[in-house]
Length: 368
Image (tube, rainbow, N blue to C red; front, side, top):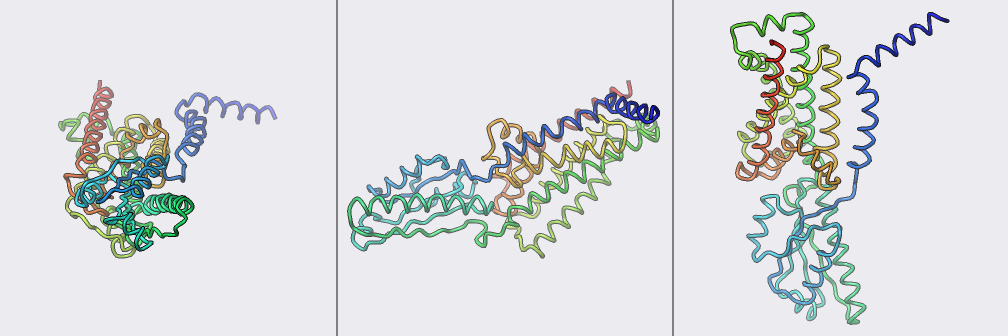
């Protein structure tokens, strides 16, 4: 019995001495409950909406005012032309557009019917359909109020039109997210384990002492993994296109460029992880945890970033997958170009340079 207790005490001492393991064991439950508690919000909020009203009247103004006052909507005002509305939708500045027909009130009074068209950005089908449902409910409520008030029955016809995803396929939303998740996990684990393996074998110092500069050596180590990761991306893209019927509406070359940029970033993160751990098993655990949970919870892959509290929205800004997923949705699903996706690409580039700088600095410290 004494030997048994001694072994238990010994194992406790090993766990307590290993700060990284202790941090994972005690920190993971705290992080997960906070993320799931605040990030998992199935309500659709902060819906960016604008109104096109060619002939404003009391009825159209009343509906627009009710939309503006609704807490689920972020009212962006009215636009002057349909071209302006379509341009805002194309740039991703709007989630929903409310379009009233010409002479709305006059048509309603004389014929008893008038039309409202709801244009929703359904590249995220859940968000698009719920946004249209909210607007339809507001219009129906306004209709009931006015019918009771003026004692004249009339019907406001709402037509829902889904932009970018007319068939409302959920794969349009999940495919970019799956790309971001798979590449993040594979690239990070492959690279970090590769470098840590050299440390465990004692060959890392030999590599660092070679005539090659540290940056060149690190670049050479990542090239094979970059090629493999790009092949993985192409496989996912082909399966998405031919099996899931997810279109590539934008430039294929631009999509490839975004993918290479993201792969370079994730490989850089793997290199950074390799400078923080000394064992392959720790590299796998650390890479998997720090790569998977942020992508699932904070990237917008499943839960819209706009629904999260301000603190988590700010935290999501440092999650690389968020910017990759947004860029892929813009290029692949919405068919937009570099003039719209430049922000995401710039952020990915900045993150890559930062992580490479950290890796080179940590490597130099190791040599010294």
